[in-house]
Image (cartoon, rainbow, N blue to C red):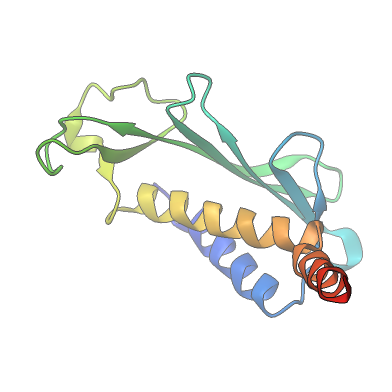
Length: 153
């Protein structure tokens, strides 16, 4: 897997934590977007449940100024029981790129949480989406307001 998506996601995490980026809600549930100054690039991050509810689909996109997708990565993760590398009797989280069938036919290609670029990108997209959600929905400000309202009662 190309390491460019992970590099972009990590930079977006850093800039979001530094409050240099603003985020807004997207068109779908769990989707948030940001537009870089000058409008030359936009980024979209999304986390949604898998159709069977057994995991999550995490997606990252980079779009140009014409809204054409120039980079996209979608990774699915799900809890699976009794896989190699897992603790006996406990589920292990497995990630795989969206175009792979599940379970992957070649288990050597499967990445398990705690190692590998697919896992790292999966985790980074989840972190970025959480930060983007907090900024877009102004969660911290709303929580502070709720605390003040409750304290005034």
